[in-house]
Image (cartoon, rainbow, N blue to C red):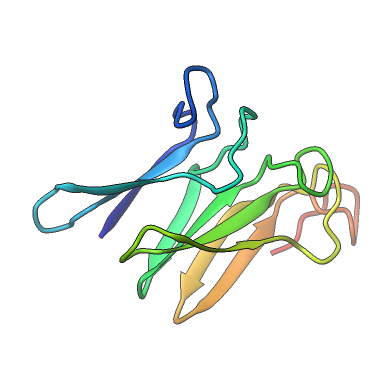
Length: 128
């Protein structure tokens, strides 16, 4: 599978812009499915700007998601075979402007999520 992010895609209607990810068959180039977050809103969450895929799991960042305050961020995991959302990851100490999901790496079932402007150590110091 090949995953292609479309961060301003109007997947939930004209102007909704939550972003989406398209999964294509790597051999044929055929579109398999279009992925949206289950809780997508009209906000521009940047869903699909950052993604990684490994071993049947697709990780997608939405670093401007507002679950724990403005632009606190979130990361979603999807099953590549079905396109279904498996889990939504949020940091235990998330706060506004942390931008959790600004960078992502996944390998062998381990997911590393960057929080670009996390303030735990220093103002906008960031955290891997």
